[in-house]
Image 1 (tube, one colour):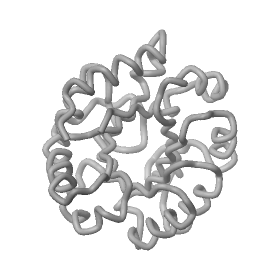
Image 2: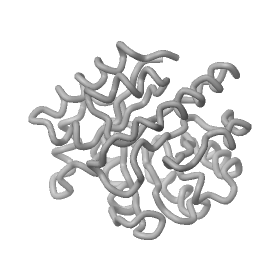
Image 3: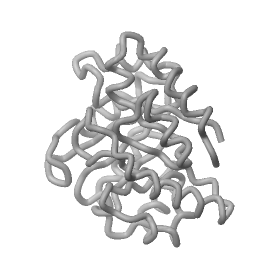
Image 4: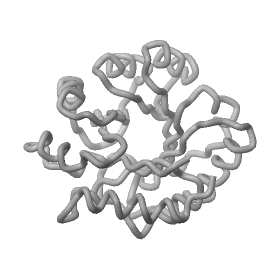
Length: 221
């Protein structure tokens, strides 16, 4: 697998989202954080904005739902033109049922794990998901410090995926930069979410290339 970069618009200028989406045209997808002020403390954006994002970018839109009751809301977001919907193990009641529902709607299903949550309980249902998101910060805010103690978890997940011959991607979100990209790639992650490192750079497109190149050198499947 090759490394994919998913810039997080949480670090973009919300007053100039279309401009900032065009600035990352060389990315592989757009990562959109939806927060409800309940599952996480922050509040971001909802369905009308996500739908408009899908209309103004040619990149696949990856929606990360940091919300309560994703069993109810994930299918709603799947109707907006997104490519994938990510929901959290700590919020979903029926992860397999929801994953299959999203697949029936033509959308990829992804499962997210917070730093304090182990990955072993989801090993038996890995084949139901297109991607597992390992959070390397506590979800809810951008610009946090990278938690390198999540790398053993990432490696265990990659080893399990490889041993079972699955094509499940591993996404890492939180503190990803040209410095930390090789660390997460070596642990087996192949989809890297980067917010501040992209939109905080003078040239977001160049920052994307730098993160991708730094990760690709170290990636081990």
